[in-house]
Image (cartoon, rainbow, N blue to C red; front, side):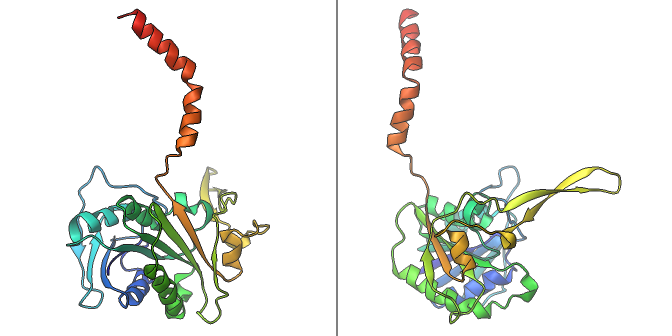
Length: 268
């Protein structure tokens, strides 16, 4: 099995090293990551600047690795289209420092890696850790849990047009309460602007992450299960057009189109 690993925390992030250590037991690993942190860039790609992929020897000798001066989505595109001799069988993104739940799927570069792979028809998994201070995290504590979850995933077929958003509690395999397949709680506004004054009296704003202060969460959602010590997995579908809704919306413009057709017919 050929596995492509990417992330948005940068190629030197300890989370990607932990994922390499785990997935190296499940297949042939290739790493293509940004050369610096790219958190919160969502699914942006680089259009007006050249992209460079620099090979690095920072992992075991049997693992190819490149640092790309672009976004997470750039990295997955480069890995699939340019750097890997054959397309990967699956793409893993992470392990991200901090959870990606609820509305985070629209902001996260970690998620963007998985989405980009899915657009190529390649199964994909984004993996994040519910911890925030990288100085206090020992990734060896979660590696066995990551291995077992990843092994189950690669043994099964991810449905077409879906990717899996996996969030891990910061705990050992023994202390983890289990796995919950849970929906995204899009009602939670996790990030909020906080106003501050500079020395000259001007107001500026900073996004504050309120994750650790959130309460009154929706029962059964990804937020509450993760806080309760479960691994949460959300299958996220992309690319579905929704034909029924499209047909309904077409009725909105029925009279408009009829008048345009009549006008064109009269002026031929």
